[in-house]
Amino acid sequence: MQKACMATVVALVLLGGGLPAASSAAGIEHRAVQFAKGSSSATIKGSVKGDQTIDYALRARAGQTMSVQLATTHGALGFNVLPPGSNDVAIFNSTVGGNDFKGTLEADGEYKVRVYLIRVAARRGEQAAYTLTVGITGAAQAPAAAAAAGAPAGAPDPIERAGGGR
Image 1 (cartoon, one colour):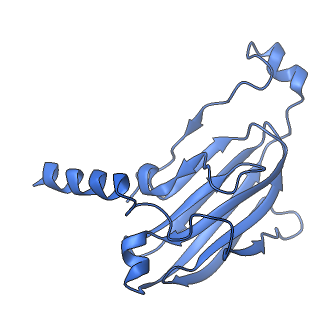
Image 2: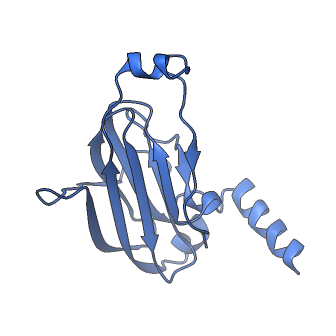
């Protein structure tokens, strides 16, 4: 039974069922994430319906740590974390890695947390409510600090999954 479920999930991802309904930047809503003064995180309550996709944008620096937690009762709701300059290539995909992300950021710039229903649910016009918590902590790392730590400049830092996923 478990093998059959896993095979179904793999097939959905390979056939595009695990991808966001909107695969291009067109039609994606953009919202800025604002932290309260003195806070290192923000909590956002929202919902998406059908093929609606929302990008939550926030600026961060290389060496800082980003955390994202998605709380929802809808199993087909997911999020991606996109690095600066990317409109479609993610550094994290919750449909594969679970609803908790924590990672050290590689570059300065605007990161996006993209919230969406997977294609199968979007086509059925389903709606999902969620609570999204996004945090940025730690000091920015100078390029020389990465080299001094033994990593070549621009080398990716490990990304770790926090929590257990869906």
